[in-house]
Image 1 (cartoon, rainbow, N blue to C red):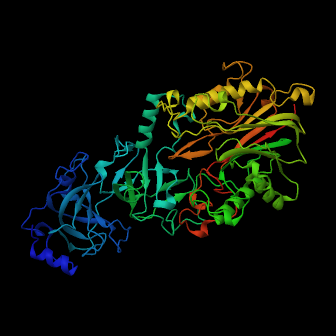
Image 2 (cartoon, rainbow, N blue to C red):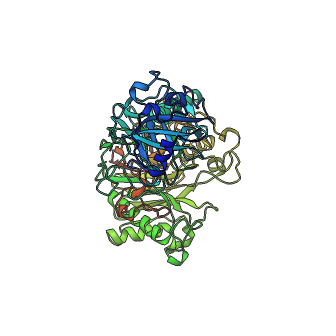
Image 3 (tube, rainbow, N blue to C red):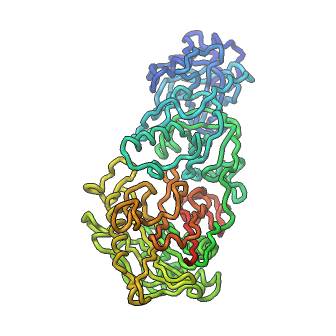
Length: 638
C-alpha cells in the first residue's frame, strides 16, 4: 500500500507532524491495538497491513533507544481508545529495523503502518516492510497508567521448547507495574543476557527438595513455578553486556545481587522472546522503563558458619578442578580450549582461599581431576601445595589411592591436617559394579567411594567421600534409569541402588577398624555430592540403614534439613551435597551447616574466562569459587 503524503514526509524527514491522530492515515482506517493483539495466543490479523495509533511507552530503537535496543518500540492505545476487555492487550511492539528512519521517544503519539506478524510467538507490527512507516504526530503525551500485574499468572502455556511458561499474553506489549515484591530465583544468565529470573511468594525450590517423588505432583509443581515466574531483562538483545546492568547502576564487587534478594518498583513493557535471538529461554519478560530497586534479603555470609566441635569435617565440590600437566602452562588450554592457563590459576586461587577459610581437619573433595597416577603433578597435590604455601608447610596432606580409576575425568579426594587427625588402617574404596554400575551401563557411573578411618581428638571415625551419577541423561539411560517424570530425573535407580550398596558395605567393616583399633568402630560419616534431593530415593536408601527399613534403630541421619540447599539449577534451589551420619556417630555431631558462597552468587564473580565477563568482577575470595556450596560438620566426643 502507499502511505499518505503527510506520513511519508514524516518518515523521510523524521519530523513531528502536527496532524490530528484521528486522521493520521485517512486513506487507511486506524485499527485498534487490541484488535491486532486479539484475545488468543496469536493475532487474528497475521499477514495484514494495518495502521495503529498510540503513545510510545517504551523506546527500544536500534542505536537510540532510551530503554534498550530491541530494534523497535512499544506503542499503547490511549486510555479512551481501550476496549475494556482484560483479555486483550492494548500494547504492541513495533519493529522498525536496524536503522530506523524516525527516532521516537517515550510520550510520542505515533501512527504506524506495518505488517502484523508473530515473531517467535510475540505479536508485532513490522514497520520496516515495503510501504510501511512511522509518523510522530504529537509529543509529550501523558502515558497510559501502567496496568497492574500480580503473579502468579492466571495460567500457563508451553513454549517452543516444551517448557511451561506463565501466561501473560493479555499484557504483551503493554506498560505494566508488577504488584508486590518479587524474589531473585536465578542468576545463571545475568552476565550472558543481562537477565534475572524473578518469582512471587519467595524463591523457587526443586520439587523433591521436600516432596516425595510423584509424576503428577512434579508436573503441577512446574506449572505453578512457571506461573510464579517472570524474567527481568535489560531491554537489549545483545549478549555479554559490559557493564552488567543489575543491580543498578551496574554489577560490581561492592554492588552485588544474590538469589533470594528482593526486587521492587518494576515498571516496564511485557515482551515474549528469548534472551538473545535464538538463544535463551523463550518466556515473558519485563523490559524496564523505570529503574528497578533491589533490596538485599539474602546477605552474603562473610565467614564460614560456626559448627563448633573438637573436630571439623568439610565437603566441597570443586566444579571440576583440572591442572593440566602439573600446572605447566604448555599443557594448556584443556578440554578443547575451554580451560586456559590463566583460568586455571584463577580457579586454583579461589579454591585455596575457600578451603583455607573453612579450616577443617578433614576435607572431602568432589570433581577433582582423576590423575592420582601423576603423583607430584596431580591436581590434588597441586591444591595441597597451594594450601600449604598459604597456611604453612605441612598443614595439609592428601590420601593417595595410587589408582587410575578407569577413564572418567572426575574423581573424589580426601585431604587432612596431620597435626590434628591421623589415618588409621588402609585407604579403601567401593567401586564394585553393584555400587557403581548396578544396571549394566557401558561404564561405571557412580564414582569410587573413597573411604578412610581417622583417629581424632574425639576418637576414631570413618569418612567416606562420594560422587553419585549426575541427573543428566547422558549416556542414554535404559530401564528404570530413564527419567520417570517424578522429579528425580535420569539415573535415579543407579543412584538409589548405589546408596543401598554403600550402606551395606559399611556393615562389613571395610576399613578394618577391628584389626587396626582392636574393636569394630561403626562411626561413619558419608559426605559428598550425591546428585539427589533430600526427598529422593537415593537418600532414603542410605538413611534407611542396613535393614532398608526406615524408622528403625539402624537408621542413618541426614545432618541437614530440607531447608538447606547447596545448588541452584534452572532457578530451583536444591541440595545435592550431604553429610549423613551412622547411628552411632549422629549423637557426636554438634552441628552441620551449608556455607552459601556459591549457589546464590552470579557466575560473573567466578573464575571462568570462557565468556567475556568484566575482568573487574574477579577477586581472590571464596565467592563463586564453584557452583556448589560447601558443607561443614562439627563433631564432639561422647
